Image (cartoon, rainbow, N blue to C red; front, side):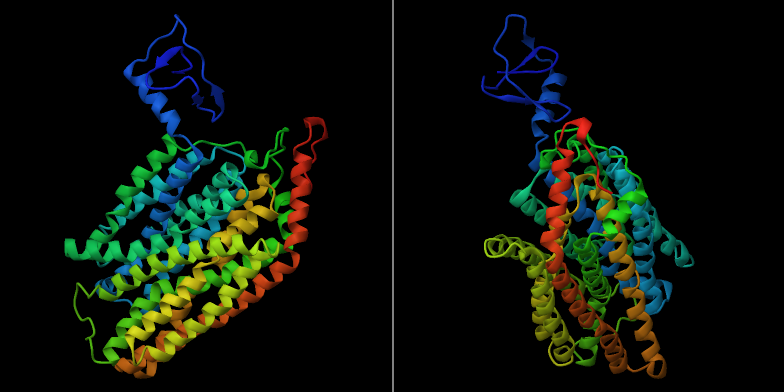
Length: 505
């Protein structure tokens, strides 16, 4: 038998059960008493809801929200050719949609990071989801003469999604520790490739079902409302540092300048952030342009014709989306398992696994542009292997941050890492690749072969950036142990009685 806080008896519980309170604490079950009375229906629902507020359920809901974030982000990429035809824009104009999204995302990230270290995180998350869902839904009604309004809407969506990406990993970091945290972050970051792939798939299916690309933007907002509501009701707001066993009173309101100085001196954090920027550069460019590149390859092979009217074929977006989902699952799982095994051999396993996977990925991504002209199947095989290796490091990079940054700075660290990754990565890569492609096409605008080759030459920039990212992960490995030990020492200081707590600046 369980007892709710107002003294009513909850049926169907054993005497050994414990009750979750709204604050997330646990209280032992009480023995039956004559003063107890049966629960009213509303109280039974509240008690059942409290039992659902477990760390694993919370991590699942946060992961679901992350899937929706990336699904919405790449839905536009899945119908990009239709958008180009309707608004009559070139490669650089189409790449601008993703660039403005990422620019607003990265500018807002430090702001939300600051707020996430100081205020209720789940309220910020829910408001962010509700905001981008509303804006995405409205953008599905924009007509042909208002392309600038579509660009503006993607800018606003970037602000809403930034709140989620900056804060949600820190809640998981406060619910779990060690290998459990690695696994839960792996599930959470599986949303990046899974959501991206579902964005292509859902966008293509919704477009075909509705007969217009507008319908692609009307699915994720409905799911976003569900996710935002679940976060408000079910996800707890854990004490910052609770998983790290910080029992003393923590000085959380350190200045933003103090936090930034500490992060700038953290070499593992700096190098892993630069490596993340390299990954973002490649994934941002690939997510927008690889389906287009494969369509042009088939036109050159004369197995397909150029799209001259809407709706355009969605086959390549569907295939690429499915590959992204599968490789994301494989990459995150293989990354987590490999890291766990390698930790038994070396304490530098996390950055070393990331470095090796990045360098291996660059080889297969180079091969895409070698075989695509002759074999689409061969190109898909290279994409599959290259993406799997590239996706190995998503969750591991987040875990590196959790190891080397103290809990009271994690939201700021995640936000600023996101800012750096996007600033140097996918904020400019879609537009830059499109601009290089347009520039190369100027002399041969009517040649389908040159349109294919020019986009391929532009995309060849990506494997070189990936190699650079691998070098940054190797640099992270050099300083990882020192920075981890410093963070653990600071956490131990935070665990002292209130009178002795000192936050290192």
